[in-house]
Every structure is written in structure tokens, then in C-alpha cells.
Length: 127
Image (cartoon, rainbow, N blue to C red; front, side, top):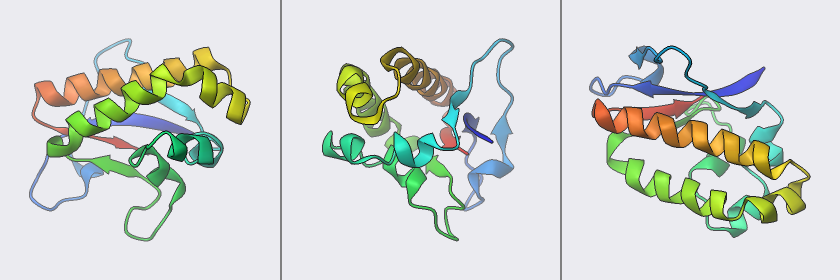
């Protein structure tokens, strides 16, 4: 399995995965293999950089189903987290053993999804 990022449109209190927006052709949505949930996004190194959104992927509960749902009102803060992680990709690479370019690629996919979500007043979900 792999982690993917999607854009969703809010629909009351409905779970984000119910109203997912189709990705434009050629869109890359990968955020890494399932193992990155814990080994990168939920790692101590990621948390030490002040990340609070992406580490939630490692904190699987019945409520979140292992998904990270970011509503429209939190997209700016989430985007800032992604920028901070991208600026520290070499540090994350050294701490986790994952290639810095690969980390940057995944973060770019997430940031592109954030741009698409903002354009439609939606949120993002990583699942």
C-alpha cells in the first residue's frame, strides 16, 4: 500500500473521503510507501522540527482511520509545516535514511494538492 494525497470539498460533518475531487491528468499524488507513515512522517526528527499535522499519520485511531484530514481553515498552517520540512529535507534524510530528493518530491505533491484545495475552497486528505 502507499499513501496518497487528495483534495476534498467540505460537506457538513461528512468524512473527507466522501467528496474527493478528481485529480487533473498527470497529477502526482504519492506521499510515500505505507512504512513512511511511521518512519518519516511520524518520526522523532519530523516531530522535533515542530510538525504536528504529518505526524498524525502515525497516530492511527478509530476516529481518523489512519488518515490525515486537513480542513480548509488549516491549510495555511499545514502548508507552512510542509515548507519547514522541505527546508530541512537533508536533516530528515540523515535522521531517517530516506533520500532527500524523494522527501522533497512527496512534499511537493502535498503542496500542489494544497494549492488545488485552496482553489476550490476544499481541504486535503492523506490516506
